[in-house]
Amino acid sequence: MARREIEYMLQAESVIKQYRQPESVITAVNRANIKIEKGEFVAIIGSSGSGKSTFLHICAGLDKANAGRILIDNEEITKMGPDELGRFRGEKMGFIYQRHNLVPQFTALENILLPTVMCNKADASYQESLRELVECLGLSERLHHLPSELSGGQCQRVAIARALINNPQMLFADEPTGNLDRKNADEVLSLLLKIRETRGQTLLMVTHDLAIAEQADRIFRMDNGILKLERDYIGGNKKTVDTF
Image (cartoon, rainbow, N blue to C red):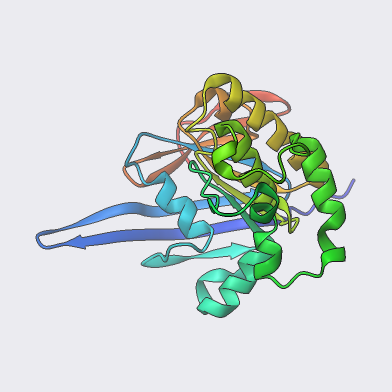
């Protein structure tokens, strides 16, 4: 029986991020490596200030590393110029943050459709995606409400729909349930994973919530900028690993 060739959606190689201060250099990310297969859900945990969000932002092309390289679907984004990277992110990536970052003057629907406007998408190209997302996320009765008229959980659902409206292959989430109570956090995560399962997206999530991290295929821990594999799922069983 032939071995399955592994297809990676994200590859980060020897990533270093440093901040220079008058009398010292702070290394936020220290030679971090990771490979994430297509369709995989990977969680990164760690204490505040450990470098996990910085690493996520570098992987998503939102921040620049001092050294190393990032490949998304075999395209090296660390070599791309601003315009090329912007187009690539719009086509391939979606982003969900701890704060929903909705435009307060826009309705829920207008916020969801922002990425389609930025990528000059024709209406017909996203109508089916919009219908599916609105139905799955339970937003049909809230589309014409402003963010100020929505609950925290509803705002985060709108943010998820916005991240997924262009049907990206790679989804980045930075503490996506950090501002929600337990009930809303569980509901939002359940919906996010349901959509991911249906669409087959690859998901990289930074979280401090171990209950959420436990649902990932693999868990990494960031400690003082060093990334290590903490828990691997092999044959459906958890296996603790001490080193990366």
